[in-house]
View 1 (cartoon, rainbow, N blue to C red):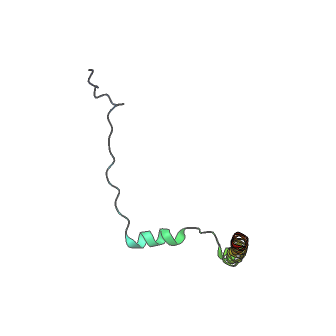
View 2 (cartoon, helix red, strand yellow):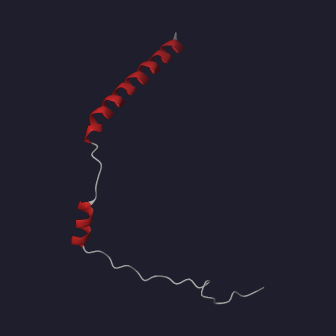
View 3 (cartoon, one colour):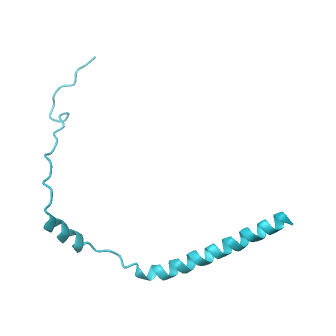
Length: 69
């Protein structure tokens, strides 16, 4: 068994822990984030969910009606 030599390419140096941000710094960076505007999706997503549920409910009712008769 060959022991590895302490060569500069084989030695792993760990960086020190980064200082934790202060609350004010955190809030400044948080509020500076650019977020997509998705308010237009709420109405359309609700309609899509409603109609999908309606179609699935009707199909399920028809299948049950066919199976019981």
